[in-house]
Amino acid sequence: MNEEPVDYRSADEPAEPPLHFLTTCWRCRKAVAADTPTCPYCAARLAAPDMLHRASRLPAAERSPLLPVLVGFAILLGVNLLHALIIRVQATMAPAQAQPGSQELLVHAVIGELISTVVILIAVLRVRLPATPVAGSARILAWPLSLMGLAGGLALNLAYHRFLKDHLGMIMLENLLNDGQTTLGWWVFIICVQPAIVEELFFRHLVLGSLRTTLGGHGAVWLSSVMFALAHIGTPISLPVLMVLGVVLGYARWGSGGLALPMVLHFLHNLFVLLLEWR
Amino acid sequence: MAVDPKNPYGAPLTSGEKSSQLGSLSQSARTGQLKQARVILIVVGVLTIAFNLFFLLGAEAQVNRALDGEVRKLQGQGMMIDQQKLQEIRENAVRLTQIVSGATVLLGFVFVVLGIVVYSIPVPATVLGLVLYVGAVAIFGVLEPTTLAHGWLFKILIIVGLFKSVQAALAYQREKQAAEAAAFGTTI
Image (cartoon, rainbow over all chains, first blue to last red; front, side):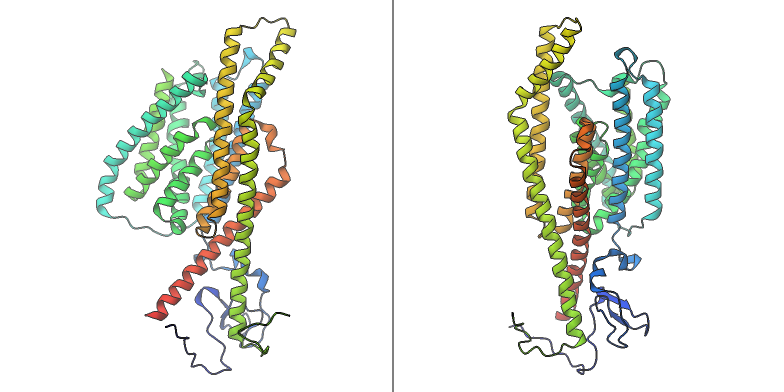
């Protein structure tokens, strides 16, 4: 049987507000409910109730890191979209004989990745995430299991792109890289080193970390991998395999408890694909 | 006039009761925003399914129309067309259009499902809805840049609506967790 809790306070004493609604009255400095229009102790006028929904009224420690991370993702997507559009417009407007070579592609890639790096570093510096403990046994197992996951992901990647080439007649961008105008070292830095560090900082540290506080481990890994795939809009046809790679990297981050493993896996994946296309 | 069953005689409320009423007011405002998220997600999903089913079913006719126009233009410039190669391009283009339209129909179903489950899993549903919508707009922008300008005002309104829904869902979840923790504390 449900019994109503008995309130033993006197009728004049203001009720204790629930903890998550507490704010401080600017006049009497007493704790009051955040959604009360007037202070129950000194009758000072407080903020209007319709202002209640603003997240900014929460103390910094209680604010969800998810919203700034989503804004960062939108900016990153915008930069990548602009980058892809510039390359597309250039390729469309240039005559067939003067299509952009690997040098032009390299310049675009450097500019695009420089902007992405700045956006991500600002986000990393601004957003604070709660610490997440990891079991020691999971940390040891994460390395061999992740390498197996990477091998599976690479096999899927190759099979998928082979299918696209053979059955849909698609030409991959990497075919254009090895035209003698640029060296492999540049592309290793642009395609392997920079994404392995910067993308992992954003997707596996910030996005995964902020999503874990609200969605739990598995939900965070899958949603962050959707975001990781969508961020690669320059190659929209590769989104399904990028999502699978994102899942492998997400679980590697979760299992190992650090960013070193996903960074190494990301680097190895991109290096393998680059070397395969460079031949 | 509707009578409040808890206070049928309209007695003046204590400050605690006022606070609790405002608390429930905020909860109902958040529920309203989640309802708005549900409407947005379901409408976007249904429209996505409808438009892309149309493209999926008429893929061959559309590709033929586009390619025939291109062929006529090239022939007008005095170029010879390899019919075998043209047929290969035609088949690949039809297949690609069907794959893209089919994938987008699936995306439409995902939006509808997210709209349906938005009350039971508010944060995942609204975050995924926002991410997928923004991502889809960007991807179609890369594939066909003119789509970015089509209905830009509606796109902005949808993105703002979904972003506000994420904010509401986060607050809703936080309050629900706090209420559950408080209830757990009182029973112990």
